Length: 249
Image 1 (cartoon, helix red, strand yellow):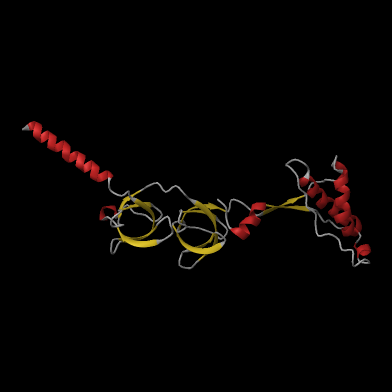
Image 2: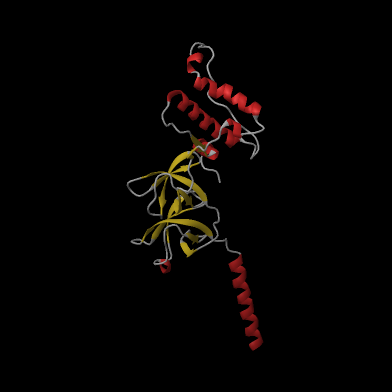
């Protein structure tokens, strides 16, 4: 009799295991808002679609906006907290609305989403969930699109090995700047608007840029006096791409 009972118990355990592993897997979503008055929450699926669903009341004091929650595959109710949604994205805060929602850059377009972060400012870099529905973390304004430095003394004589390049830069930029009156007599001969310096790191591009700023300021002082100083403007190249196509991952 005991052997028969043992066999039946093992059979029931095996059936329970088979039933469990044959069920559809749990789905995951991001929790946006909680409505305790009717035991519902707003969620966002990885696809970006949002829904209002019920949650297990045993989770009532544990749920927080921004959490990854587990959904029942049958009812879509929230039945657990945590899960493996690893994809996170970075974007830029473009505006903060009066109702607390935030306008962000989403693939080059504006998008208004929720936030669990206080103290956001326009221009801050933020981390959002993979559906771009809620801000999870504020990185802050960690990068600048540009930086202005006072130029050190970099006379042309301090640069060696680039004589031909220096001569071309002087002809294209320095001479039209210093001798404006001569160029004004030749309306068909307009000075160039700039030059493009390219090459591998360490070939002298930045040094030449600083030399241009320093020597133009020096020539201006010689002609007009005063205390004009040269400045060098660094611009982060990726910011141009971000402006037109959005933040890259």
